[in-house]
Length: 355
Image (cartoon, rainbow, N blue to C red; front, side):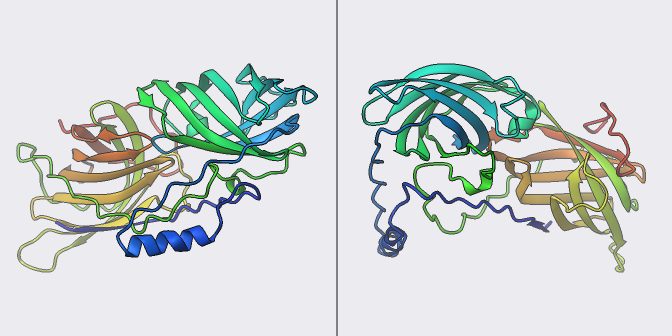
């Protein structure tokens, strides 16, 4: 069965005044792609020694697609080189004047302006990465100083909790923010702007889970539903599904479902994460294919196969793949839905699989 999904766009503005590539490089890359050539790697960043005392806004893109904003304050003896430097780290949403730092660390800035910052351990609450749980990581930042107002580099290390993730390939950039007026969306996430890679390749639809053993019957599912899901048998997710059932006008029966998905905690009237339409068989079964589902910083392709118990509940199983902020096979996903009043308190527990 086919379904159509359209996601709200997510815009990311990224520009730094220092350390950018020559714009001609993008055109050269285009010519190389049209000729079947591989673009040359970015040139090494030219680092220089500068006085880095003050406040900084840091934007990082950690491996796996984790988007992280930090504030840092440096105390540096710029009268000598190599120069000792003390750093305090906060989340970008924190106020360093009143909030305690996540951690403090010491390092030395070399005569060419390069230095290593060790954020070990870096413990981030669920709000920092829009995740379901706290994240504990060991992050090593290799910094190149572009000027007295900007620095950037690459990061290595690993996430230790709630899962294991190698951070090799992570990048970051920082701008001076002594007045506290810089905006995170205006700060790049590396020493160079991202290269254009063209349109994303089509996502392969997985084989549907087998629900033949689950009884199902046709019912009018028009209304609002709390969808309790357990992704890959482990990660819980709660969504609000708003559905409209349209019965078929032919003798074959069945019909279609038009709907929208939102986070369960979203207020009524807000934009949907995704809208869709799909067909329903004469015995109340349906498939919902969401190849570009975006929930916060999580990107996934998800196929849901549903069975209708009656007009008060439906359930099913899912398959697919999470691609950001980490790779996760969604085989084994289950879900169940119960009637829901949007804006009401979300219950902590509820059925999340077919009986």
